[in-house]
Image 1 (cartoon, rainbow, N blue to C red):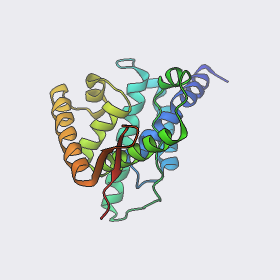
Image 2 (image 1 turned 90 degrees about the vertical axis):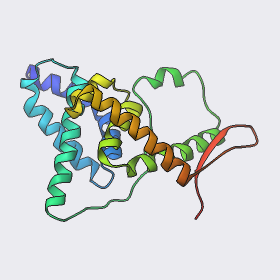
Image 3 (image 1 turned 135 degrees about the vertical axis):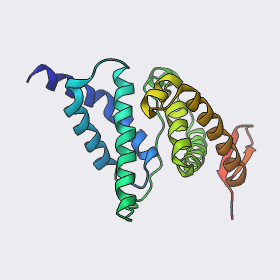
Length: 195
């Protein structure tokens, strides 16, 4: 195995789970496994050209974001949309493991958090792409604004503006589509509104 293969294996092992989650949020109507495979094919091809002008994570997410956008453009030009069953996405950041090992949340609290997360993620997935992508990169993937500007190839000011608008749109959509309350233990709960 040469040095490039070793680096690619390490990149795949490190970033595959997070990218799978990211792509399933960014493009819930696309086949995540196919998209992930395409992203890693591009990463493998372009690894020799990585110039370290950004972090490897930022570079990888830039490739993933643009691959998803390219796939959407390709599908829209064919007037064909492939819908798959949506599966609730677990949201675990790469640094959360150490914090979570010290505290085990009770099952009923876990269920409430899962319902609340699912409700919010459903709304996020319905936002228009410019807003959805910036919100996911910032609030779910924890990228800094400069990294988001690099990934999306837009100015830092544009990132801030889109993020502000995305949060406003998310707030409005949550107010329209979700019921907020406190349960018997005074835990904040968010559930989809009943039609």
